Length: 202
Image 1: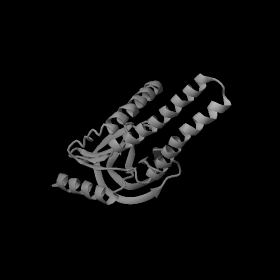
Image 2: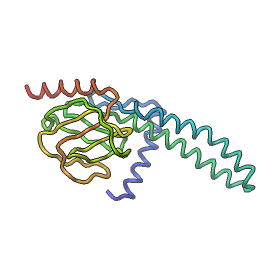
Image 3: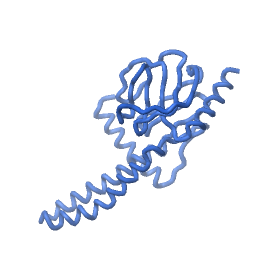
Image 4: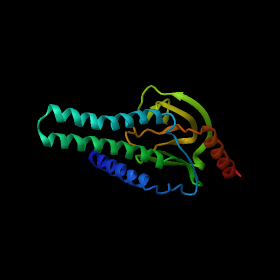
């Protein structure tokens, strides 16, 4: 998918998630258990949203007294409201796309843009380990592992039985031996995954 098409799809997904979140549509868990990952970044997102809400009337007041042109005030107001709604849609997308432990495998997600399933047959082990990443990027490659990081952190290591290439945005196309991700309830996700691994091995 081209960069332009990816950008359009991401924008459409943001607004769709805003509508679904505001209307309280239930999240489809695909018959599995959900594990969120917002805990580490929720305070930061809250600050951004709070600043945006306060900024709208202040910016409107400044433009009203500084730029004596009516349309400028309307344009800046529209852009400010658009930015606030976009951030709410972004937050809604993260909430509505948690990691899932399903019958097919471990479904790893990050908003609507990252979504892939690691089958139980390809997983050797799942363990808890906190790591700090050198970058704030969501997708990172290091030490032969694919990191799906939140707030520059991962908390779960998924060791694979064989090298696998995962289709992710900004991916390198390299095969990896391990996938590392972050979840608020790391213990719960590890327990649920191990239960499925044990059942698969029987």
